[in-house]
Amino acid sequence: MRSGLGWRSLNPVEAVADVHSIENKDTLLRIAHEARNPEARRLALLKLGDKQLMAIFARSDCSPIVRRRLVRELDNIELVRQIAEDDDDRSVRESAEQRLAQLEKE
Image (tube, rainbow, N blue to C red; front, side, top):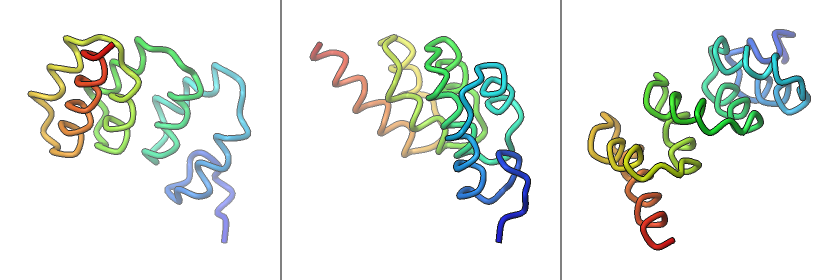
């Protein structure tokens, strides 16, 4: 049963479904900063495609789900290396290590 909260919902299915339908960059930016649901924040950031914003959230978002996905989009080798060394979540560090290996091959 849907709550009618859209991207504000804690239900990931409802929140993400709503974000998929949004194309307005200002609204996506608002979602990235305000959504309580990490999947909604992650999708909004990916849809925005702003590498600088992704870098900020990859370092600071409270959810490993968001950080883990965004680190795979980063191109800054030094930033990815820092995340691989410093993040407090093992899965984020592993994603950063994989991305770092990929960047070093390129």
